[in-house]
Image (cartoon, rainbow, N blue to C red; front, side, top):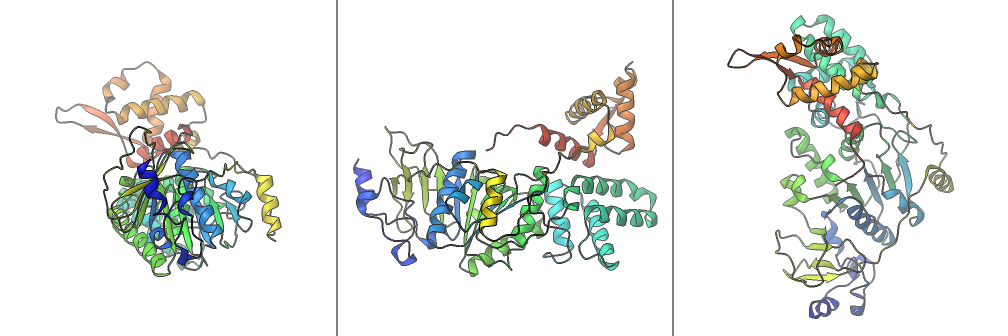
Length: 456
């Protein structure tokens, strides 16, 4: 209780009085707000598990909007649409439904290098594959296509392949497989984004399409009239293994936001998932973890940034550390109780804002590469299981050749023809099957489609 009483005199509401949010009375510390000044939200990180993290992110976004901030929310969870019931001016753009940008356009930042680097980060392409994608982008531009779609780039690859050495055919085939995975971008839905706005990428045809769209959005924020950006989950944009030039461009975009005085609020399961250039420059951190009633000792401070630790339950305390103090102080935020919002409600909401709005028919589930190759369900399932075994290094060539199953042999033949598996010899002269890069991506795509909705 002593720690709670000490918190009463230290917290003044979500922002400072100078920021125009208003003061919080000392006695309101437990039912009050986050206790962070606007400067402390210039680069804020919310960490925690899935829905609880999103709930805190929504609460913080709501408080910022009530304070007059004009936010752009890049939501890859699908949780944030509940904000439309509380922020009347919030416009909602749902990927594949009433919004779809073109990340391959020549007008995008860093064309073509950053576009190819973004694809490399999301789909793990090789340097050679990236080179051919850049060539296809430049060839499209030279032929007057300033906004090429994946289907256009597939045609340019045919031109490149006709002039390339036969040995390069496998790399070009791999780029073709990549573009097949991104064909959702063929269906462009032009829409001017006007903050305050929510970009809901959870309806994208795949996680990879959503990731590429999110990276493209963050790299091209310059023209938008905004005072803050919220991203959840941020590690889908700021990945540790991103190509160096992409990481530098993302850092430059974040620095541009800082120079404009805009807020950057990111949400991840743990801040170890984002690069050091983010964690080393945090101005505050909100950690959503349960705090035991019997142990109110503040966790050891890890960085110079202020840190708030929140709980799973509304009545459990949040722990706050002031910018000017190492002491962490427990407070609790009021819970709004956001509810999911459907397409019809979003359509009515957008029309109330004067938007000429038409919700497009929901995109059908995109067939995976293996589904395109194997129309027969039994062969498709065999291919998945075989590739999973090959990834584990447990399939010698000789063992397959001795099998009586004609289905298995046809699957191996088709996988080899599409350069998804190859043979290699180990040091003992034994031949094994191995997945190619394209094969790894195809198997990853299957696993992404089959993964549960549990998020972290």
